[in-house]
Image (cartoon, rainbow, N blue to C red; front, side, top):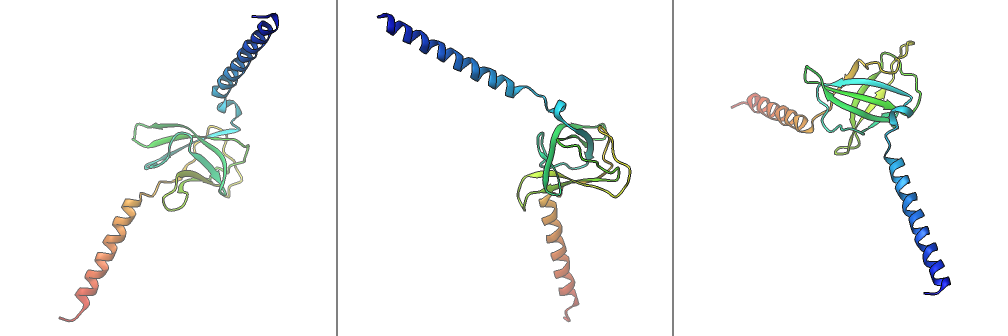
Length: 161
């Protein structure tokens, strides 16, 4: 191997090592969990039925994503307790509501925050008292079918025999 070939091999190996080191540091930097440090505010909500919600699901206001669900747990009354991390410092009145909504008919679930009209704002870490649980589509269909059967039965009973 000539001196030029040795030098080229050395430069190639060094460049490869630098590239691997750079990719490794980038990957490790992206994995660090600094969401809590960047969160402008956190709030706690609890739902009886939180079907379809998961860790990392979006939190929206007026249809715009302003945060995500950062923690999910069950309390001693078997209610779903979720911690919401907001990315922006948005004043949230203390009578605001958290609703579980769906993107379209069969889309993903998210939490929609609806600000109230109070002049007092919630502090970071506070509990949002007003909530609306997830609508379970199977229960809704069952109610519609039962209503249709009851209406048909009344119509049949009202007809002269």
